[in-house]
Amino acid sequence: MLKVENLNVHYGVIHAIEDVSIEVNDGEIVTLIGANGAGKTTILHTITGLKKATSGSVTWDDTNLLAEEPSKIITHGVAHVPEGRHVFVDMTVRENLEMGAYMYGRKDKDKVIERMDHVFERFPRLKERQNQLAGTFSGGEQQMLAVGRALMSDPKIILMDEPSMGLSPLLVQEIFDIIKEVNKQGITVLLVEQNAKMALKVANRAYVLETGKIKLSGDAKELLNNDDVRKAYLGA
Image (cartoon, rainbow, N blue to C red; front, side, top):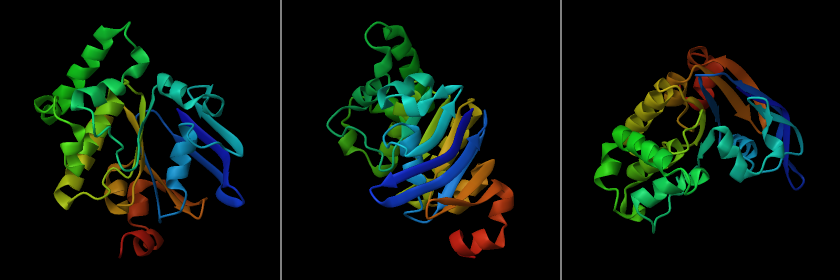
């Protein structure tokens, strides 16, 4: 479904992403792991149009995403849960969720209601607090809201950037349970995550990035038991 080929991205003279190629197939959870600064977030930003590529291609369901504006990419079924959550803190939960369905506009209120009901069914806490300001939420609750906002667009694929960052171990487990549940609903997931152990446990396949290059790739469970990966990323 998603195919990134020979992707190159520069920040000025810095070659941040160098000839990266990845594939994400329908129904998979694929994770990108690597140290800070490896280029994981840059890859997601390039896929969703927030960063311009120097060269290469990003194809999604036969659509060239590099030629699309970021505001249009979501209409192709590609949703993004950004690092740091970036919920609208001065808006209510309900208003945040409505922002996730902006592409439907005012003409398709039934679709917005349908998606809202779906999110509330999946996250009862959001329903209970739908009129509460998002800025009063804990980090875990804001992450839940960010995922719910992405689900409002009825996506085929969700790109998740560091969803467990800054959360307690209990909430980390809850977030990964949510990722698995979202995937079970038929949504493909491309996951960037510093918690390599948890990411490899939930993923089907994985890519290991080092300084903007793919160093290893393969079955996630096999990489979980790879000595080099264990030493570098799992503290083993």
